[in-house]
Image (cartoon, rainbow, N blue to C red; front, side):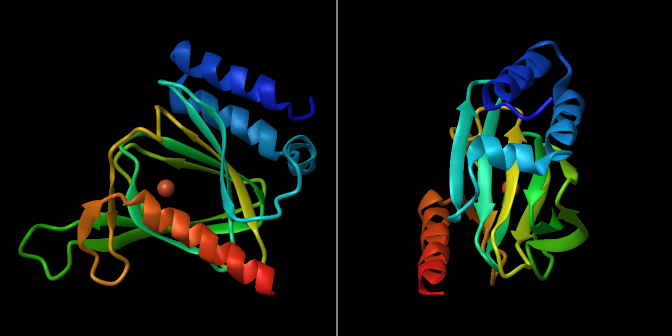
Length: 186
Ligand SMILES: [Fe+2]
């Protein structure tokens, strides 16, 4: 069945409220990104970097997240599980772990995953990750979070010093604006 925005939202809500959790969301996302063209048909061809809010409730947040060319998001956490279904481009993720206070740096790289079109990434509730779009074109994914992601207080780690701070939505918004400015110039 071709991707349908309203049905996908309803299926995600039903999956979580019936206790299926992240595993059920993963199955829904795998089905969806198995036909990337159908997602583009339903949501439109990604033209700009940005965060589209498809759905937001206490239990589930669904974002249509488009990364600009070569855009990088600094290390951050979510305090809830996240499942990422790629429908265009590629996301390179570095996973980080916090170190004891006497360590040289607050966090260190602990692993990596590269998600290609059609892949689904599963991130646990305690994950810290940074994300890079290594391509010179837009990368697009459906991000499904197990809670009200936009309300959740969370943290980011400065990309140069790796010092932890409260998540700053202004910095994130500016990163997308800068990316789109570069797109307009290209
Ligand atoms: Fe994230």
